[in-house]
Image 1: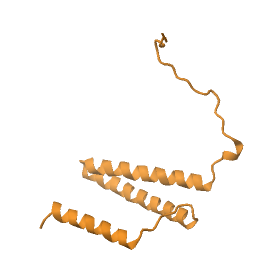
Image 2: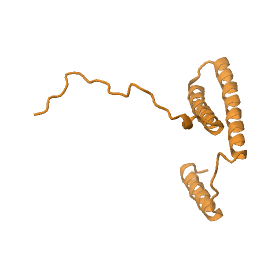
Image 3: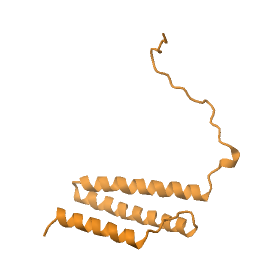
Length: 111
């Protein structure tokens, strides 16, 4: 029979080990900033949905817009340097997806 400890304990490596050649580079920093900007815009959207005070809403909306602009600037910089890639889609697949959602919208929101 195995005895379980009375309390849980944290087990961790007491030494942080980062190899010298594993330093962050410009691409890593920009990617980290881009992810932070994406997270912040998502958070601001939640605040905007729930803001009951008009002046606060306007202030948050201005910050949200500036954050979106920063996010776009980071994306453009990374894309121009070849550090952010997007995949093109076949026109046929785009048309199929458009038709699918158009039909869905017509069913959900009839005129």
